[in-house]
Every structure is written in structure tokens, then in C-alpha cells.
Image (cartoon, rainbow, N blue to C red; front, side, top):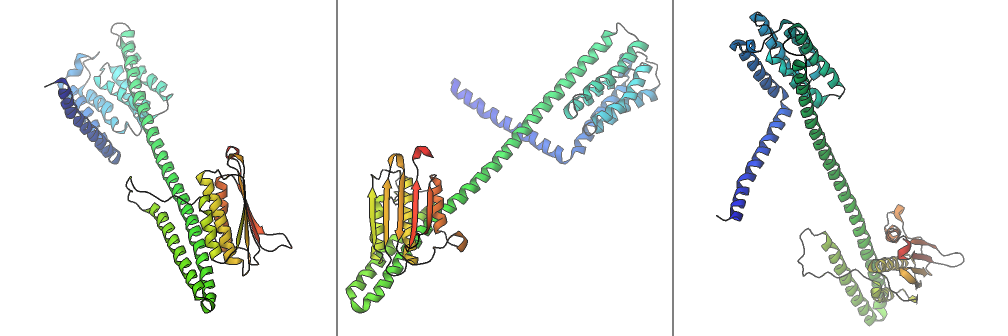
Length: 419
């Protein structure tokens, strides 16, 4: 077997084992979180058993400073060191305070049971769960019985008794702090991931709301304008039917053309909402630009609204700005068709400046009322202002000053660098 194949085979055999161990660890931790008493009882039972084995086997006599202590005392000390471990996680410092009298008796009598080392497990949990300053008190409480042993039952020099205990405490504290740091770091990462997930969901909701608003604007512009044109053509065709059947037929033809255009634009808009992905070669018809303005004006004129246009400068605008200007003009002419009344005319003045700045003014001579705004349930003026705000522009819409009749819509988009 070549080295590459052997390495891949080893990876296949090692990775599942690692994943298996991780899953087992996660399950054990989850079970411990749901049933902490079960783990505490098992671990405490293990250490109680170990202490009783030391007692019944007589192993404690090998290290005792005084091997003539009564058996009942050794049994009591063994249980005193091990049974309180049941509460080591919930009340570690309280457990240490409960063990200290046992440790003092252990040192005073010279039994020096090895079960006294279980205090290090309590120190570990103090370092893991409590404030760091509690470790100083824990060190004093554990070292004090050792000093008693050194004074009452000397064996060698004092540092041979005290230094190993201090080193053991330091190791237990280091392990506890390491585990605590790791746990806090993991919790911080989980909290950060949770916050990022919440922010992602919020951004998704905001994006969906913005998309719904955009689609609502587009549908309002498409449906409102084309229905207004169709209404004007239908009214004109009705009056022309009695006098000029040819004009009525032209109106019906224009109604059919406008309807098909409206349906086509609606289909393109609704395609955005489809969940399935489009093939790479699919072609989407672009949004209208200022080059489509002539067709828009032709439809409006066919609906019976005379429109005059004046253009200053060269129309060199990005597609987004062109769409904004187009939709504002479309909405203004639609409102004139709806509210201008018979005999109304419209005028459009377009001024193109340097760096993408543009000004569009639409005025009419109608005598209709004010177009509906957001407070009236309409979307026209609100949609125009939203589009204008995307490019930092200004929009003014209102009646023309007295004594002039009609309505005026004034749009200004500043230079691109000025946004």
C-alpha cells in the first residue's frame, strides 16, 4: 500500500473514532446537566469505597505517624473525608469547611490518612466555580492540619511535609483554572454564535421587509399606471364608438397592447418570488430605463393625455437612477390621468447635470384633487419618496401656486459623489 493510500485509510479509521468520542462526551455532559445527582452519587461512592478499602485493608498504617489509633476513629475519619464530596459541586467551600475538623483530628491523632488528599478535589471545584480570593482561604485551611502534623508528629524536616502539599494545591488550582477558562471561552463562543444567529435572523427579516416594500412599489407602479391608461382608453373608445368605429377599434387595440405589457411586467416581477433557481442561461428582461420613456409617453398620449417633453443635457445615468426617474414620471402621469379631469395636459422637463445629477419636473393643468398619500391608503407619493431617498434626493409634490391650476412633482437626485 502506498503512503497516500495508507494515510487516507488511517484518516478514515481515526476520524470516526474521534467523532464517536465527542458524541459520547456530549451525551454524558447532557445527561449530567439533566441529572447531576446521579454523577455525584457515583463519584462519591467511588471515593468512599476507596477510603474504606484503605481502612479495611490496613494500608493506612504504612504511612501513619501513629498506627495505634482505634478502628472506629479511622472509619469515622475515612467517611468524614469522602462522604461530603457529594456536595463538592454545589457548595465546594462549605464541603471544605466540613472536612477541616476531620483533617485536624486526622493530623492531631497522627493517623495521616491518604483520604485527606480528597481535599484537593474540593480545591479543584473551588478554583472552577468560586472567586479566586477563596483559593487563599482554601490553601490556609488545607495547610493548617499539615502544620499540626509537623509539630505534633515530626518526621524529617518541616518542608518535607508542607512543600508537597503546597505543590499539590497549586496543581489542583492550575487544573481548575484551566478548565474554568476553557469553559468560559466555550460559553462566550456559544453566546456569540447565538447573538450572530439572532442578528442574522433580524437582517433576514429586514431584507424581506425591504424586498416586500420594493415589490409593492413596483406592483403599484405597474398596475396603477397601466390600469389608468386602460381606463382612459376605454372611456375614449366608448365615446368614439358612436361616431367613429375606427377610433374605437384603435382604442381596443391599444387596450390589448397595454394589458399585455402590464401582464409581461407582472410576470417578470413575480418571477423574483419563485423559490426554484433559474437556469444559468435564463434571460430576464431588464427594468425600464429612460430609453423606455418614449413608449410610456406614447401610451399616455393614446389614453388621451397630451404630454410635452423638454430635455437639457445628456442622459448618462446608472440603471438604478434611470429607474427612479422613470418611475417618478410614470407615477406623476398616472396621477394626472386619474385626477386631472378632462382637458388636462402635462409637461415634463428633464435636466441632466454632471456626475449623475438629474432634475425632473412634471406639471399638469388638471383640476383634480390631491393624489392619495400614505394616510389615505395610497402608495404613490410614498413610493416616489422611498425611491428618491435611496439616492439621497429630494421630492416635492403639491398643487401649483395660485393662480395656476394643476399639480407639480419636482425630483432632484444629487451627484453620486455627494451622497
